[in-house]
Length: 131
Image 1 (cartoon, rainbow, N blue to C red):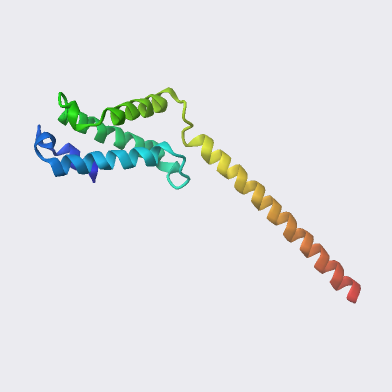
Image 2: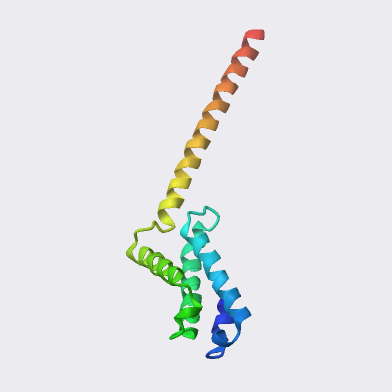
């Protein structure tokens, strides 16, 4: 939704419209925090979300070009470092966390399967000894 809004913005509208500018910048801050942490719910679509987030930030920056006072210096710096990390591959992309999660699930499943088999053996031996 934000991607579509940013695509259709008229040139200079963010500099003129305080409410729209504040809402978009707030969205960028919240999304930046969300995408910079490991979140198991978005692992499959992380690359897609990052791409569209970058597109939105580029659109906002083009709108505010030459008007640095509208976007906080710390936020610009954090965006720079976040994009640098993503582009350098310093942050693991979907394969690593997904494989780690699958390995954890396999261990848990194997443990549970072993426990069920142990219980079945005990039940079978108890049933046989009663006959």
